[in-house]
Length: 448
Image (cartoon, rainbow, N blue to C red; front, side, top):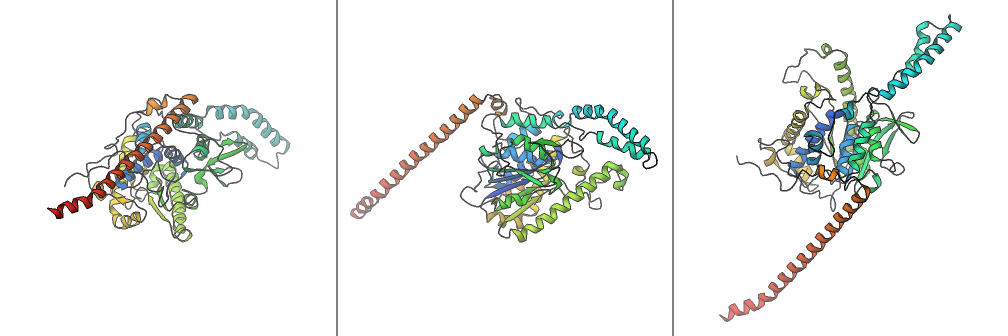
């Protein structure tokens, strides 16, 4: 079989949503592992879907770790550039250090330690005054308020994204984006979902909104924004895909890296005959995955009746996927392996569902390239046809140089459009002259 030729240029051939159906992307969480998986899946989708570039769709919705990828795509970063930053770590301007996600929350620990003496004395005094009404252990339960609100510090995540979005041609302001972006977090005090990027909440910096959306309770402390505290957006819904549908998306791609593991379907034997042998971490992981996934499936099922004229396509790991389930969600050591695994899993999913997906995608002007999917020689980094410009762009951090560079980009686009108009006018004139000569050519032919 001859090798399939990748689409020219980047991994997409341009989204057609500008003059046709509106396309959206909704990304769920999953920690650093979710970021890696989603990049691999998007690389596979862009390569196989002609008519879509995921940094040029109309609507983005990001929840938790998915908010980091959604906001980067909405900011114009291509999937190839994100692969260079997050997977291959080739960006000199924005080197990705695992410490961005795993730095201990020392400030939280210090505040907790400082509060212990006062809380202990209050608890002890309360027991002495009411020895018959309260046991010593009940009195000491007051010390639980000194437990840190998070193990890891999420401030480095916000700092990294701030630098990334303040680089040339990017923005940390929802209102300056060319595309709609919604980053969903949960108000800790009310339990309500808050959509940053929507009117009234679009003045919050994108990086701060992502920090709040990814603040998984217990691991990261709640994020304070204008006097309110926010935690992970997945507490209410897994994908919040309805946000994109309500915003006008006709075709919505969804990626969810979190699925419960079904050992009965697993091809490869795991380290445990029963998951309970993995102890509390494995049991809690399976419980969390099952709750998140079942809630998402129910939500997607309702979209068929709520939005009958819209199409939603979900991509996720198989429930028999032991590699994904047993990989540490905070692991960066196996970035390339996980990204390749996500890339190949998504390709296999597309090929297995080609009869279902091809006509559905065609309704929205998107072509499923089965020839590319059948090419088994391809890998996630086979066609990263972009110059190593991330570090060059990242060095332009000054606001004045950023504005000047943006103005030059707009001038270049204007000149290119004018050049295209001149070329079109020249071509029309040439065709008009050719048509005018046709009668003369006919008369000459008859005379001969």
